[in-house]
Length: 248
Image (cartoon, rainbow, N blue to C red; front, side, top):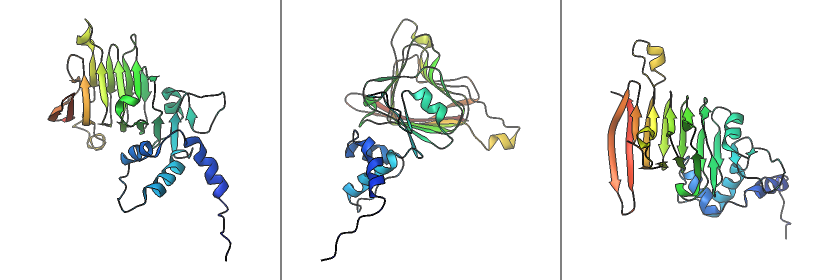
């Protein structure tokens, strides 16, 4: 009987997979469904094994986790601000589920994707405390998904420029006497009609299956963009919104 041959890279693969043991297969399948739907014909176990390899690869992902011990791992950061600073254009940041992560006036000037690592948006919470204008400020084309963003005063998301996609998130503004200052989304983007080269870049916000709670109103626009194509679905516990903010 022929002996089973071991691949030379097997030890390396196992070493890369080990840091992701804290994420179960269901969580991994949920995370990657935002980026590339998996055909049913593939074996689930094999696909999850490959996802584990990809999710822990420091060249493909940046992870935000609270360190259990004082050991630095490649591609792992203690907070979102550090991960955004280290990210390169096109990178994806995966934020670990559980507890609340601080996000106060984090400015994002490069195209990146930020995804919550839980099964639901409620599992990964970004909190912006009083004294700060916003949780996240976007000056480039970006995407956020599967996150809860909570602002005690101010706005959850400040959109300056680029195309921002908000998918399956929960945006919360605390109810207080100053709620007229609170907005889940503020856009100050301006379309330059007289400059075709700049107009090709485009600005806008796309909201998909997102819950919005609190604040004076869901969106405030200070630039030339306006709210368009609003759709809402009411469930027993909440309302899910689809809409766009773009040039009329």
